[in-house]
Every structure is written in C-alpha cells, then in structure tokens.
Amino acid sequence: MLSYRHVFHAGNHADVLKHTVLLAVLDYFNQKDKPYWVIDTHAGAGGYRFDGGRAKSHAEYEEGIGRLWERTDLPALLAAYVAAVRSDNPDGHLRRYPGSPLLELRKMRPADRLRLFELHPADVRLLGEAISATVPDAQKRVAIRQADGFDGLQVLLPPPSRRGLIVIDPSYEDKRDYGRVVAALRDGLVRFATGTFVIWYPLLQRNESLQLAGRLKKLAPDWFNVTLTVKAPSKDGLGMHGSGMFVVNPPWTLAAAMRETLPWLVDVLTIDKVGAGGTAESSVSPPAPRA
Image: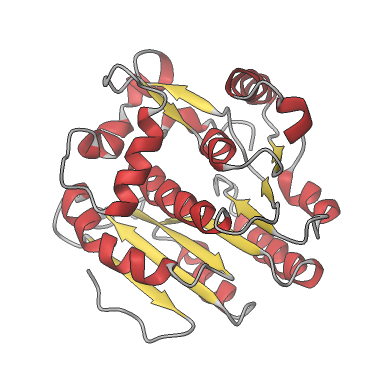
C-alpha cells in the first residue's frame, strides 16, 4: 500500500530481528566463491535518519537498535548487526539507520548482483540516491524497479548464477499480503527450488498473522522459523507485539546461532515481561523451548 512508509518503524525491534537474520544468511552465502543474486521485493527507501523527520517523531528505534547501541556484551550475531549499523554512524552517535538494501549491498561482493523492487515513488527516488551514494559502480551491480515486488519476482527466478537469496518483506497493512506471500513462496520454489527465501512477518492478533507460519511450513521441507515477542498483545487486539523470520533452505548454521542469540535478545528488547519471549523451530530438529 502506498500509505505505508518504513521510515516510521526503522530500527525498531522487528528490524533488529530481521536484519540480524539477514546478515547471518549473507555471511553464509559469502563463504562460497560462486556469485549470487539478492532479490528484495519490498526495498523501502534504503536508509533512514533518526535526527529529524518521521523516524524521530515516532522514535521506535529507541526500543530496538537504541537498546543495543552502547552494549559491550553483544552475542556474535548481534555484534555483527550493530557493527553494520555503525558504518552509517562513524562518530558513534546513532543518527542514521541502513535499511535492508544497504545492508545487503555492503555485504555482497563485486560479482554478486542486487535486484530491488519498491512501489512508493518517493521511496524509489530515495532508494536510488542511497544506493548511488553507497557504491560507485551501482549501475553494474544493482537494478531498481518501481514495481510490485510480488509480480516482479516471477520473472527473475531462477537467477543466472543459480545461487540466490530472496527477501520478502511487505508491510502487511493490506491483509491480502499474507496470501500473496504464500503464493510467492509456492511459485518461487517451483521456479527456484534451491533458493533461500527469507520472509519477515508481524505478530498480530489477527487470523492471517497467526496462521502464516503454519501455511509456509507446508510449502517447503527445509525451513527455520524464529519469533521475537517484546510485549503482550494489547487488549483491543491492535498493534504489533512482535515479529518473525521464516527462512526456507536456511544455512545449516543459522538455527543454532539464533537459538544462542534469542534469549539475550528477548532480555534486552522486552518492553513488558507479560507475554514477552521468543521461539526458534526448525524442520530438521524439535522446536527449542520458549526463550
């Protein structure tokens, strides 16, 4: 939906979970010399500022990256995530936040390729500016399309390199996004069965959200699902109380690393202890106890 702008939520607890997992997957991809593609279906504006504008007025980052910023006891995955954000804040003051496209591009090698979709016209312009400022040869490595990422994904699979990471991260403000995520994964696995698909989703008191992970599990034999809940659902059922990351064809190291990280993350990011926690489950092993 064109009313949604990620700038309102940049750096919040959901971004912490999403980007920690995303960076861990990219680190694994980089262990092999063969090039790969990253396809991001809902790229956003690329980067965000905390010292002015919409992000400052909402200040959701204060209960996300803000709680990790000065910590000296970060687990390895979170240390890598905070280090990636520090690249935008070399003076040590938390003023900027890199979105998924910038985090992806900075992790990728010169031979790897990034394909970005964003529908909002203002965010497309900002995204192009952010990418150009990050990489001098961006035109060779990155392609940006103002288009619906669900539709655009179909024509890019499988990527020429036959190695690829597909990031699916819609706003879910339109409840049809839940069904479109399921359809995108089903179609994507037909076209590119060996691809790694990373899907972010909100935890809400609505049936579409409650049922999404279960629907995704039925589509793939190899998956990892991690959730982070920072507070109890509101009595009126409105608002996001946590989020999840569902990874199809995950790196074999991801489940163990996230199970070690999750209890620490729950402890630091909890807003209220009633109902807060986390889960990590995998298709290849029994579900871990709730953190």
